[in-house]
Amino acid sequence: MPSRSFLIAAFLVILGTAYAAYWHIMADRLEQGIERWAEDQRGHGLQAGWADIVIDGFPLRLRARFAAPRLIQREGSLPWSWQADSLTLEAQPWRLTRIGFTSDGPQTARLAGQQIAFDRLEGTVRLDGRGRIREADATASHLALAPDTGTGMGGATTDRLRLAMRLPEEPPRRHTDPGLFVEADIGGLVVASRQPLPVEGPASLSIRASAMGALPQPPNRQTLAAWRDDGGTLEIERLTLDWAPLDLRASGTLALDEALQPIGALTTEISGHGPLLQKLVTMGWVRQQDARIAGIAFGLLEKPGAEGRPVLKAPVTVQDGYLYIGPARLAPLPRIAWN
Image 1 (cartoon, rainbow, N blue to C red):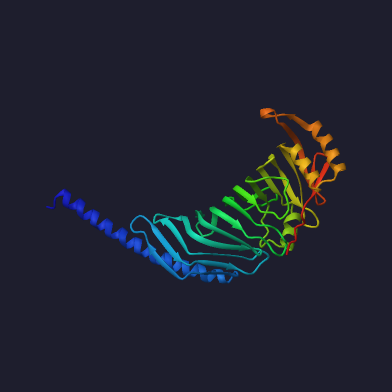
Image 2: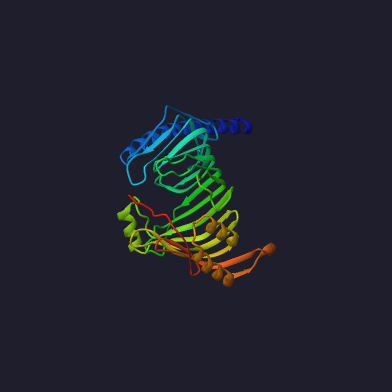
């Protein structure tokens, strides 16, 4: 009769052999699935390619290593592209719905004609049972936005950019149901401008918001108008901006008007508004008459804050192409040209 130790050893050998077979089957399916995904995306106008792919990671990982990966979306209202030296996708064999990704080395993205260079991209993606993305969280490091020669805009750099999105478990049925949760964080932002700015970097920006209602797909004038007519809004849970001398904390609601330009109202706490207003006047961005009205309104709304700095607790509204703080019209806003 075989000993207990022999039976245990035999069981472990069988188990290990079965797992090895399972891993290799999943590795083959992974490579085939990637090829099918790339082929399917061509039907949606997205070109996905690479110079080479290697599947490894046995025994505890399924890992796909891409050489010279590239993604190109030429169709739609917002064409974009991305290319890098390498990309690694990684998942646990028993948890294939959660995928980590890393891309080291120089890489370039283009969005609406603007070129962005960065040197690292990492994050995670969670899929549902049908292979659709439900959550995504990505962080890029040391970004550089090239100057736009067409508009004359200067470039910008930032130490870190994090973008995250999450779809609700159930699709929205009404305009009061969330269709998408989004987060963005920018740190170490420095803007290169050919003209002096009323603020000084580096700056930091953070936003957490929810797009309410069924999302416009794809985002163009027609779908955005339908989303607006159905009551779609952007609910801002938290918005923070630290850009000396300004320190802003806000929450509120934004929407689109008949011309598909942003309108809305925010509840804000602002410090550094006095020095900022004076800089805007000095630079000719705000008329002296408007500044006097704003100064009177600010004085009525100010309250003592930390370290003796006055804090302005006031509603901020966006309407008719202008930014208002309380009743004071502060500055015009750039117009958005939707395709």
